[in-house]
Length: 473
Image (cartoon, rainbow, N blue to C red; front, side):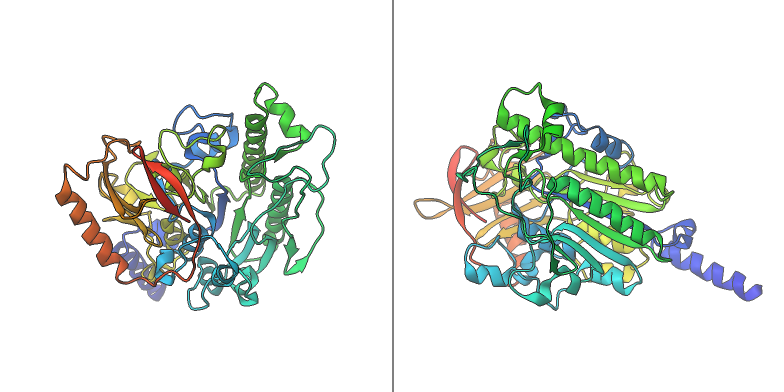
């Protein structure tokens, strides 16, 4: 008994040294559900502002979570942002700057074997792990399959495709990005590496698969890690009649389709939350919610990154801001809102810390947010960084620097004070060259430890503070 008392005392002391309370150190590792959406604009939801559409389930999750009002993703497009999210490391560390733009990029988008994922770290620690939905990190190397990168189970697809393979009367399918309505392309579903045929609405399919994973996890005497990576509301604009009817009051058919897709997404979140409640897992499950980037410019009239300028593909706030929620009733003691800048890398670090793997947080770029949220006036990061080839940005405190190429040649530097100008309309680089140079020098020091991009990517044009510039993605 005296030995047990001594061991308990030592454990409590170690917990205090880690910045945790003894009660936290004694908790068993939580289950983890990470929900990732695709191209969802921060202005599409209602928990930060009026929002566009009813999202009662996400509103519920926000009420029960800490809302990170300055949440960021590490890239303005899907594949690199997921590379950062799945590893907890800036993807520039291993040269994953872009979405694939050519055949060579299709190979190089595979995660390097020597970069461990959060799932691999949790799997080694005894977690039962599963990915449902979009991966977008395999490329053409079989060893980059989710089943080779830390997931015990995988149902999903490499990148994306149609939501409805065989439309029925009343379903709404609209052209977008010049894609003909007749072109129906399967996402290419696989289950445990084997192709499977699915004929149902994609968002509903993924929800059902998530529930099936929870069924199997319930029979195991170990914690679980589930990544539910939805394709919604990424184009194509497709929704079944059941969801379209619920937003029938929206006259614009494109906006109606998008609202129906967000409704399906919101339903999915609600279904998963209720299932955790039903299983008695609410208190013991860490739930995290994030989008992979902002909503895109080619449907800018129907989605929203408000109040920010910029979109998917560029480094304006609208391209890299994301909804960012964390809920853990038993182990998360935090304020209702945390306003210091955070980034998606912190989700992995927080998961590892909560799982008792604090030593591994040192190996990644994220910050375990359990400690910073207890002191809301203290920044979680000295600075946040972005790189897309020669495009780059840095945020430090209220200041943000963006540097990109111009269509006619040359470079352009923008400097914004985000506290005074969150929409990035007033470029202060000319009036405050010292601050611009300070931030550029800090970004250069950070980038000196990175790997050159392994990928070529693509280029488009966008506007920052009224100036036409190039955006690499």
